[in-house]
Image 1: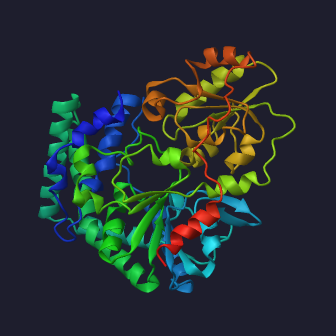
Image 2 (image 1 turned 90 degrees about the vertical axis):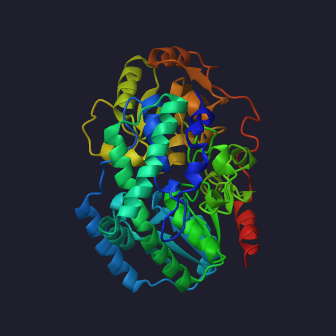
Length: 467
């Protein structure tokens, strides 16, 4: 089973006929990811990977929103050529400040030509002050949107949402033999209606931000994702280009970057997408079919800058197991078993995915050693082995870590496809391979096309096209 088979669910003109009654922006992106993540959860995971009943912890969101508002009053948006939009993930400590490894390289290369609008990942205020001084936070808007969208839902929003989810449910049943179920259908309709009601609120906020900053270009994280549809459409309407910068794994199995032919050929869906995708290398740009106008090779700024001074440790004995963010308990069990049977002198560490790091860090796992190092590349310097299912870090480890293994599961086959890594079936099988020194080693040239050099020059050249 591959994603292309599952995309048959949305290969119907009905998905590009329903729009927001106020903004005219396509409705399907508002809930597309939820539908596919429910489907993937049922087909690939042992646990749900989307919680339709989930609500932000309002006390934490309210505190984040109030604090962001106070900060934004003191740091008002400055007119800039480029607006950088980030979800707030990727903060690492650097010289006593919090540095965003995804976007602060772009910001520093542009200086006063850029302004950053950043969310608070997990609604948590950075412990350290930010290295990027030209930025504002969007948590106050998220709080406002979360409250106002709920009270703005009207019958027309519910009707459109109902038609949309009924179409998805019918296509899922008829084409894939998949049943959404009555409870999940009701939750999806409610979510879609609420998000449609939030479209005009989101559009007003974006218009206000673009009016104050007047950028010629927006560089955004996750811009191909459905929750960015209004930003993309609003910017396009104003003649402002939007480009997504690659921030992680992009493969033919990634639902945010691959769509059915009906969507790929739809002018309405194209308006909800960025105009360009800025990839780490041509290899990544060849992995997806989202209808962006241009795929540009930029490189990976963080990887490039870290490798200028990166050196492996003289003693490397860690087996770093990469979490997937969802099946935490399964990975902890995997690490417990592997730790009991791994040959000396190897030691097993579990490295949580960013979305599960806070939860794992709260403790309760004394029998599993947790990799607490903030920066992946520092962790890789002590690693003899990296193990995972579907993580960008598997690819980032190429050429830096001697041995790389992929857990051969339905999930890894789905997301990674024909990958270059050695496969193993279970912890016992992996332990046997680890006892043989030549297993898990990659041949030269595997990473060709993955990591372009000269990211700064490439990035500045791309920005200059919009000056």
